[in-house]
Image 1 (tube, helix red, strand yellow):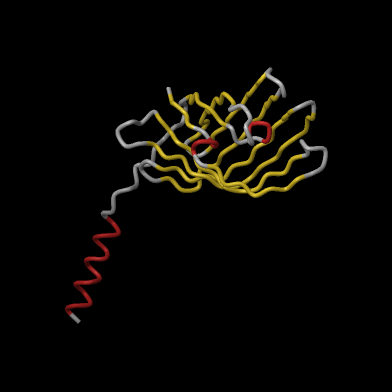
Image 2 (cartoon, one colour):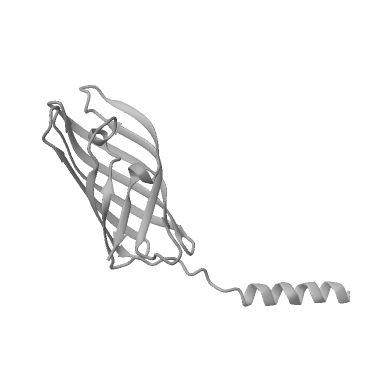
Length: 163
């Protein structure tokens, strides 16, 4: 019986004295970086300039613009929304959705995407974030509708420097 009381007391102390996780709060910070996730940017396309802003600790929006006047010409104008669902000290897990207008080689169309992702911030370098995402993408850039699964590293989902 003494052992049961001791274990109960230890568990009670551990659960009541646990430190809350100090998640990286990006609210009110503007991130400037790149994103090459949309259809016109894939397959040898041009990465887009990206601006990311967190309205609340768990909600952020991103705008993407890409342009190449070379032959074949390419462009992307897109927006994304991210909702943080789990935050760790240097890692934010989120659900995301995006909508973009893309054009390549005279073809243009819409692309929609949805999925989950994570943004990693290097400890000690609080202003630099690397994103990785996975999910599905639906576009009609080729003239017919295409549904694709996606898995993008920080090389495509982007990096942002937060001011």
